[in-house]
Every structure is written in structure tokens, then in C-alpha cells.
View 1 (cartoon, rainbow, N blue to C red):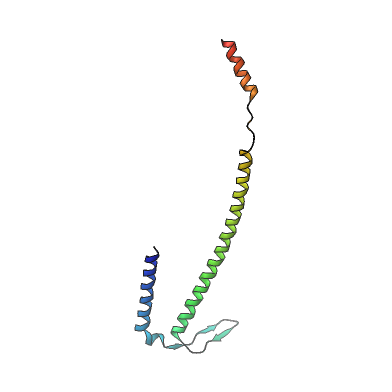
View 2: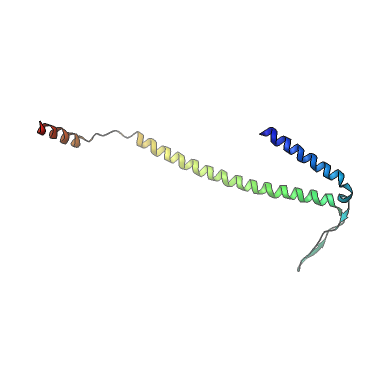
Length: 119
């Protein structure tokens, strides 16, 4: 499976390189991004389109990895809680295993007496 993932990632990188080389003219064009809200307006200096693509890509990686880290911490906490519960239940089970066996002598005597009466 690792080899298949590696081959697929290589093919995707090759495809990205081909797309960049074939569209280098359009990617090199400069553009200005504007934000005009009711309370704030901002305009970026002229920058190349490929720079915008790289920044957005890196921002996406940052957001996805942040989400992954938060999920990982949640799962670690859940594992700790479940491990603690499992340990408590194991201790309880072991305490039941170590209880001495007590025979019901009253019940055995009644059966034995009952058998003598029938004979």
C-alpha cells in the first residue's frame, strides 16, 4: 500500500509540474487583491498569481494540520479515559476471581436427606 501511495503522489506532483510549465505565462501575471468591508478596506500590492496559489496552498496545509492536531489530542484523551476504565474493570474482575469459593452446605444436606427418604 505504501508503494501505491508513493506512486500516486509522484504522478500528482508530475501533473502539477506539467500544469505549471504549460501555464507559466498566465501564472506569472500580477494581480491585486482587494477586501472592501463596511468597516475595513485593504488592497494588496501587486503580486504574481503563482504566489497567491502557493500562499493559499500553505494556508490550507496549516488549517488541515491544525484540525488534525486537535483531533489527535481529543483521541489521546479518549484513549486515556478508556484505558483508565479498563484498568479499573480489570482490578474489579481480579478481585472477584480471588474470592474464596463457598459451597452451599444447607442445600446439599437437604438433597442428601431427601434421597434417604425415598429409599
